[in-house]
Every structure is written in structure tokens, then in C-alpha cells.
Amino acid sequence: MELKNNLAAMDLKSNSNNIIQRIQEAAERVGRDPHEIKLVAVTKRVEPERIEQALALGIDTFGENYAQEFRDKAKILTEQTDKKIKWHFIGQLQKNKVKYIVGKVELIHSLDSLSVAKEINKRAEGLEITVPVLIEVNIGGEESKGGIIPAQLESFLNELSGLSSVEVRGLMTMPPYFDNVEMARPYFIRLREIRDDLLPLFPKLKELSMGMSGDFEVAIEEGATIIRVGSAIFGERN
Image (cartoon, rainbow, N blue to C red):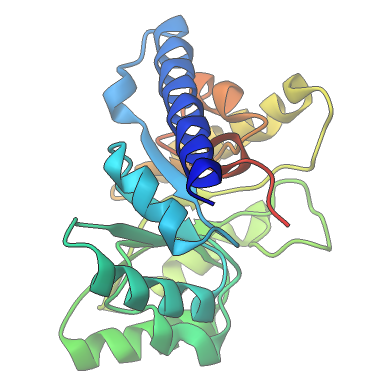
């Protein structure tokens, strides 16, 4: 078991070094500063012990897809380590799960519902905090995915502006899956263009969360400020 854990830690170190190098190279290809890009290590179905190993390698920001899985892992890791962990919530958020994450995560990536936004606002007011969020935009118009369609985005932003304890920091998207990563590029370009068009009206709309294990380099080339990388760091999960 110890040998298996050591090998896993070695793989994790090799993978994380590879990702950091690829981030740097992608940024430099388009004249960007690699430090502008935040790496969120996606820990869906990743054991707390593996997250601790990633922490030891200098990765400090982790993204969870499920509120209760986040709650349980955060509790374990708070007890097991004194290192500062930054959590992002990147999955589809249901109104009845908001209580598990408000005040406990640095950023919510996937807001796409006014009712959920109101619940976040209500709980944030109770804690006397402001909750930073990104709006998920369904660029591809896929029925299987959440997100606001681009034509409704400005209206949705106007509705959110009345919620004093919710602060919209930017946009997030997940393009359709393609074997050829270049096929994802137009979706990343489109999100950046939408953000740029809205910035004069909503000047805090700076962040672009886009790009995952298979396409993050293209996303960086097109302006991503946050990338969400899971399997390329932790390996394939069950």
C-alpha cells in the first residue's frame, strides 16, 4: 500500500509540473503573463489524501462539483491539515444545497438561476458577507447542460444587480466535447466577446472560467483567467 501511495504521489507531481509548464507555454504563445491564470484542480471523486498530496506540491485551489461531497471533504481536510485551502464550487448548484457552500468557498462558477441567486443572497446576508459568483453561459445551446443562453445574459445580470450580497465577477462555460480541441476555440472566443461587450455596463465582469483537461491551452490562448483541470492532474477517476 505504501509503494502504491508513493507511486501515486510521483504521478501527481509529474502531472502537476506538466500542467504548470503547459499553462506557461500557452500564455507565452499569445503574450500573456502566466500568473494571470488561476489553476483550479478539480477534485470530483478524488480522495482527501490525494488532495493533501496536491497541497504539498503547491496547488492550493480545488474545485468541487457536488455540494455534499465538498462539505464532507472540507471537514476532513480541515481536521487533517493546517495548510490554507481555497475551494471553488464548479458544479450545478441546487437551491437546497446552497447552505453547504455559502461562506465556505472562494468562488461559485455555475450560477444560472435567479432562485438560486436569491438563496445565496439570503444566506450571505445572514452571514454579513458578499459571495463572488460567475454566471454559467450555455454557448453551445446544449439541452443537457445548464447555463444562461447568451441572448438572456444581460437581462439576467440586470436581475442580479438587485442582490446586494451577490457579486458577479465574470462568466463560465463548458463547450461541447470534441476530439479535436481546435473545435472548442470558437466557443471560447465567443465567451470572451460576450464578456467584452458587457464590460462597459458591468465593469466587474473580469473573469473567464473556461478550459478543462483536454482544451485548457486553447482556452488560455483565447483569454481564460481560470482553468478547471481534473484528470490531467489526478488521473482518470472511477
